[in-house]
Length: 502
Image (cartoon, rainbow, N blue to C red; front, side, top):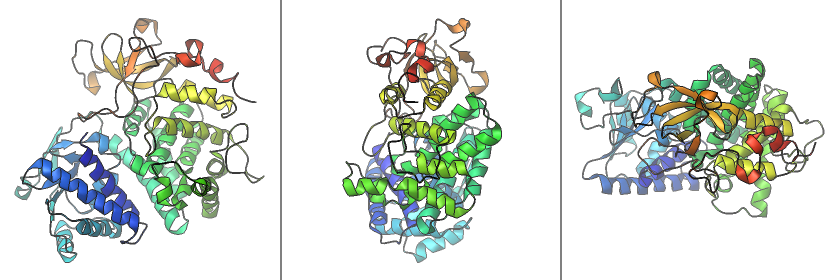
């Protein structure tokens, strides 16, 4: 991955997000503009004399003619900004300044709906933005895009190099958007749109397993600069997969998914410098961050729309099964099965995701820590999670012992033997989605095949990020029973029942 491109996308999208909340001279907004300008200067130095073109096509980020799936989730605001300006790409001259980027942030914060591209260009000039041009949208056809008119001849062709559908990428953006907008509302005035979260939860629950695993593939990409948003989306996806596997009624699945999307809304009222601090928190900062469950619960109660599951999940998702943790709950807040499952999903996601202060753990490492933390988790909730997610979570890219590669669709009968959709045969032949086979490694037909390792969560010819590796000492063997935990056959009952208080 081009680190300058990642820095630009992170800084630009964070700047757009913060400008929607804060005034233009806020230190965090200024820092985002300076970071984006520095990244642009580095990109320009690498790309030659022409402008740096960063755009969008088919719901994906586009850079130098190729879609960049790994940065697409965190680039959602940039993509939507371009669409709102009726544009396919920004063309940044090497002279682009931080002051011009600040003006762009302000335009993004003020934009409502769509703007004519000509009017947008006039607004650029009126605000002193002279080193940023707008390229027209791309004509989309097949896997590539062509410029819509002669003026865009120098714009990159949007070559789509991944196999995700446009609807799946858009669905993931919609989940991110509803969490993001609720955090913005909560930060500005303490409000929240529970109905919008529930509507997205309904759409999520209606998706079949194949679509859910594609959303999980997007969820594996790191987005630590906006992790309060991506975290809630990933928790909702994990909770939906678990409840689908245990056959929970659809209406209950919707309420639980909505609760997961809203569970961290209290973080909107925690100072940004604490949320994104790369080092250890001091005592005062720790107390501030530990206020977010109470703040979130109170925001949801004040909305008048949230049901008890959402309110209790916001209040109680950091309360352990042995009743330690934080905050001290008021007597009328009761622990529910939804809260206990969201607690498990919340911790697993936090352990396996990139954060400003830590790298991601592999799933087996997360399980090891969770199982050994006696009294932390409700045994039934942890058992359901291990059964529904497995050792190789849906969306994971895996290599099998016969040399083939694929994507995990769902957990199998044994948590170390998932159902895998084969995307590359052992002879190296790549398969498209229509011709891919699904192998259930728990079936006798495939009993001689096992998962050797996880591949990095990337499809953009970039340095590996995300989950990888097998348990220690098993590089040439299946990443199976999480050997350090000594769980025979990865039996979830054995894994959790003897270790947690009841």
